[in-house]
Image (cartoon, rainbow, N blue to C red; front, side):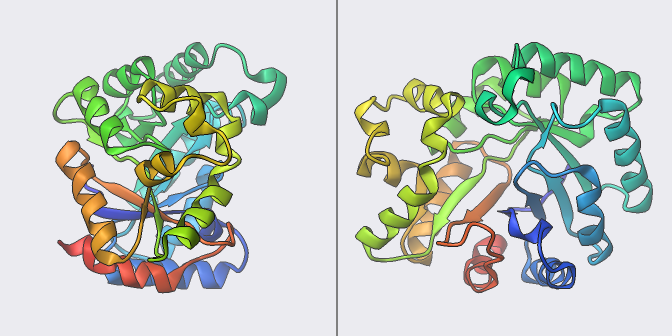
Length: 280
């Protein structure tokens, strides 16, 4: 699976004005990005308009919640996209979070394995899917039952640990949060506003504690140390350094999530600014 060096991770490009979204996807392709990752628990069908608007760009779900979509239907929809746009759709799957799913959220790892079994039975190819994975068990499932892993809210240190579990030859595509702001106070304020929701989700906080952060790092919107480790902020050179850290740690492809004050934004100016990094 060749997704290129960089992609973008975004919620807004699957919502709002359809024409704007198609135009944005076409420009991303021209700018040299290899993939668009649809954030915010997308359905498979939401990839179709962006695939139709482009000729090379890959489109991935980042991630489709296994609690919201029956695997047999997902297999059928994935096969239709593969037939129409060979090799350009990536099925990103995740177990989401108890706070978002509610009472259905039980034994998420077992639920994921059962979901993968049903996808296999329906004929959905393992080499066209990736799993949202943070801990060792889900990373191992990404290695054994999928093409690789798509970790979220992580650091370069996690990328290194993930590569150790995945081994060579498996895709590692960690999401990287980017704030294009040179002023430290403004950059960290933007980052904290974005991070607030995630610090209420145990899957993420447990992973951050595994990475060596303290409980104090997770309070007050996140310590400077946490913000500076999870977010790439500053000018283009600063973002390039963090991108290099992830590649040096073993990443194959980086979906960049540009963080602005408007979560549903389609940040074309920032994507244009970051585009040179896709070609390095």
